[in-house]
Length: 436
Image 1 (cartoon, rainbow, N blue to C red):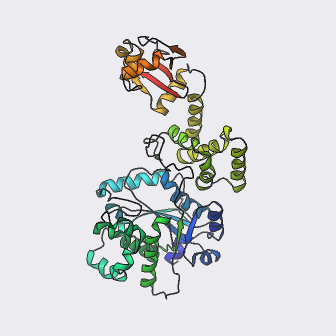
Image 2: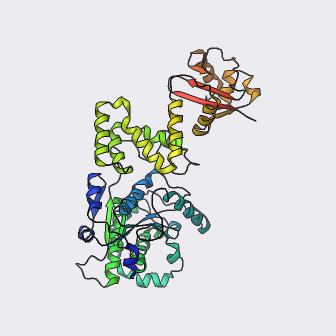
């Protein structure tokens, strides 16, 4: 069996993939030969690269992750390429400054962590159609500079490289030769996997189009294909621009929303999606769920007719949280969210414990507690200062364990000897736990 047949073994992707990406509003562009290639029904393997600069992916990576997921669902074989080699250099695409360079050990550990997260989305079962994870350090790590310049660099002119948008955007602000060479290394990756693994398709965001087409050019030149031939193919996704004007992938506080529960709790992850603006929820349902077209359109209609119900946001948040963290974590996040934003006070120690862990509550020392409400709330970081705490308390804006507090010196009694439930105003609730 040839490398191409082995990599693509399965039922084929078919034109249904492009049709689905179109109705979901994701498809940006394809190279000319891709629709005809998919129409043959022959199995195809496609890859997307992931930068292992951290030990977790974040919600911005969900676009390429779902790209691989949909390729697999339509019968193609997804290949997740971790840039253990290129990660030591960094891709200038979409960046305004050069990234920090990481050592091989850190990149290797990060790659292992990313595999665990990708397994939530892709089926890595060995055999026909099973996802593959590759690491380009396996071939770039032993590549000599002389061989690279002779076999790859000679196929690209400086004007060709300078014309790429990812390069143009950085020229005035400064672009090192190291990052300038990234395009050639990514082209080498595509050519290597095409030749050795039978991978015919590279997918990525619209800002990767220059790198994708560079790989196609290298494959065409080194495979002996004619000027009009299409031995390999490219597919680009639209860049996700929020209609509401908010930056996708950042929480209200500006923090990155990670897929790792240790970095972003399932509760916080669920809340991020639950807080989706009405103008964005239809787009996110299309991009980040596998709900059918009929289900999504019904949820959009409900959002228009009854926006206060937040039904579309709840469906989105539950679906993506369950896929990312598992059904049990999603159920717990929903329960904690409902408890956190309920109107009444919470006195159940089990619920308080769960909320404390989910929301990152505060701790208080018994000695500080004895100094009064204003003192312990400020010392615990709930308020920026004791003066701010006193003003909030005397203004009637603080409730502790279901009792409105008006005296800054008030000493509350913890629930079950351990817990404090603090509400500030109408929307904020903090859960405190006795230290020690």
